[in-house]
Image 1: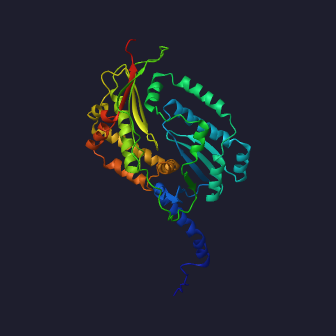
Image 2: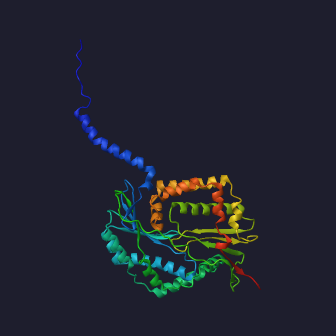
Image 3: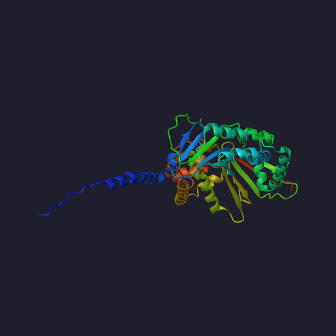
Length: 395
């Protein structure tokens, strides 16, 4: 009879291996399970900040979001450009460069279609006191010859704005109260509450600060009807161009953003399908925090552009709606996978609810053909739009 020696199920060496390996396996599984839910982890940081934990990121990214204006009129354009150039000059000054270097903060300034951003790469999580001190330093105007800068910018604007398209847009964006000194425009930049984002290997934590007040004001007032502008005396203006445009409010949640985005994309695709031979167009959509607009520049377009959205709505079919919706959903998926910082910045820019990505996705999925057609009908309707063209009488 063979005597079987009892073997314990777990010997000491095996237990030691489990003790060291299991936490690593659990951490890996936990992080991989989060990979498809990156935007679900967006959180709040204080009253003005938003954060996004990104496990394994080797650095932290602190971004200051500075909303852009429409900058269509000459004075607004000059002020907008002056603010950016002054901020670049401020960042290039020795004192601020040294202050950033001492903290190992690497700055990058860039502009998108709706905001100017100062992004800083950091090795450690910044403190609120450091962020406030940075704001105070940035708010100090740089040492510039402001008059020379303004002359240079107005010369650039003059050369840029001679095209027919730019003249039409300038007429649309004219405001009687737009003229302000460019030094004053830089100072006003720092008077608004800051919009911060922070991403990196963070603990989400629970923030009990009250959410920022949503922007509840109406869309900026806009003249409606028809306006004519004189032909350039030099004879260089291409009078075949005309503009129809309307103001739009800033999106306040994911649902509004999805509806605006879908309408803009559908307009772009339908225009590409229905442009008459020999005609041209430029479709514009800028959902700004203040002064947002959408507009259509048309060149040698036969017939009246009035109620063009309504006419294009009749051309919308289910395959085009499905293809457009799928493209936007795929874009959101790619942002979540590869560039979640982009969505985080949008949340900070518009002060969106934290679950806006879910509302954005759900709204796109739920919209049917008739609802999508209604979005197009409501795009550039005559009662809410301004039609501008050149006055060619006597020419």
